[in-house]
Length: 265
Image (tube, rainbow, N blue to C red; front, side):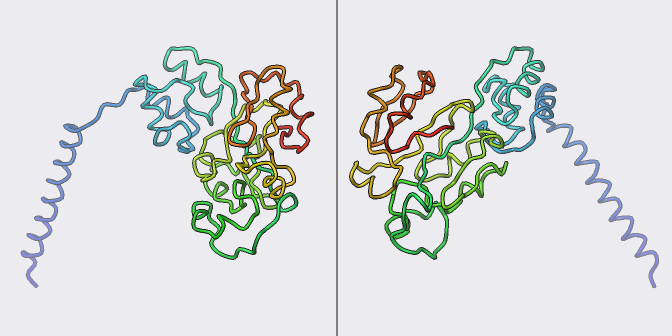
């Protein structure tokens, strides 16, 4: 056995390893990116869910945007006022008070209030809705089909399909907006956590057809809008909308709605 050859080979490998280590160490120092100390502190303060609800790629992206002045100190919807206050202290500014928002599904079309035109056994994915016959088995082509794609993207387990329609747990919701973005029918919106009333219908069908499709569908009669003392309700695209900045929570809209499309939130 040629021991000298083995020793030479080991020496060469060790030398190469040492050279690479020294080279990488020098390169790391040369190309080192200086990170603002505040960014590291803010990232440590953020919840760490990396949900993207702030509009940036994860908590590190949000922290970087805050330090650069591209995002407000209360940019994180998950952390809420408490985290915003801590981030504000790091940045040396006062965090503005903001309303807590939660997701709300604008549909009541469960298995009891609407009916199926046929029995569907294919892939249950809301993103495939345009390729499904009649855009889904339910009679209402504007409502929730209950396939649960919104459930699959929620990082907080705050939304579930109950009796064929998605329902949000407002206590668990952090308003990250993922369910809002994924819903192809735009049935989910963010509304104030403390809102007393909400329109639970997004039907685009005219009155007679809407009545056939669902027992609680909005028929765009306008009774809610005409009787609202604050002019906080409008009817657009065949269903009502509430302007929460104007709403005085008097409950008149709910009382006047014969279809029970306006619900307690």
